[in-house]
Image (cartoon, rainbow, N blue to C red; front, side, top):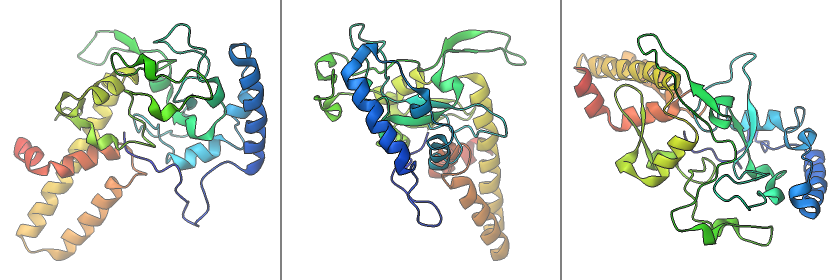
Length: 274
């Protein structure tokens, strides 16, 4: 997971957001949701609009899951995910859901089904276990003892909530997450924000761990080659390799958070690999 500036512009300087016609429809749908509350019938043609909304989310999040950073390859499914759940909240049974945010641009994220839905961690070669299912669904946990801060309606301030989930468009996930040499994600210094975010979005699933490990090994190999080229005084090779490394570090690259962590802790990773 990496920070993504929701208000960034594209390469031409254009704001990355849906057209105004979508916002007009969203305002109208929001007013209806506020009036109907828990009885509201959610309109997927607005909150998951394939023509106007979803292309903006895909561009904003670099065609990656906002949470696990897996790229959506040709034909791969993606979900429009409500960061604050629209219809109900798992941690508080009588909560009506954040119905007033169900059509709000700032509450909509691009997610893979494995982070957003309840999915099993299926067996891998050499590891035949089927591990417990995970995925966000309607979870939105707060700090222990902080339920009194939870927003219950549109007049409450959501920024007063003592939230536990890392918001990739508000927080910097790199302050909270680390990775071990096998590619597994960890909460940096066991912080509760990283731990709960990893749990809720099921970020320890094994296929994801193995995919991160591939990128991690590739990054370590690059760093070793750069170190070797520097020792040989081969400035051309150093420049070429560092340009390629910059591509891996860019927000558009898959698992950029892993690459950045390895680079920031290169002495440890290179020592482990020697």
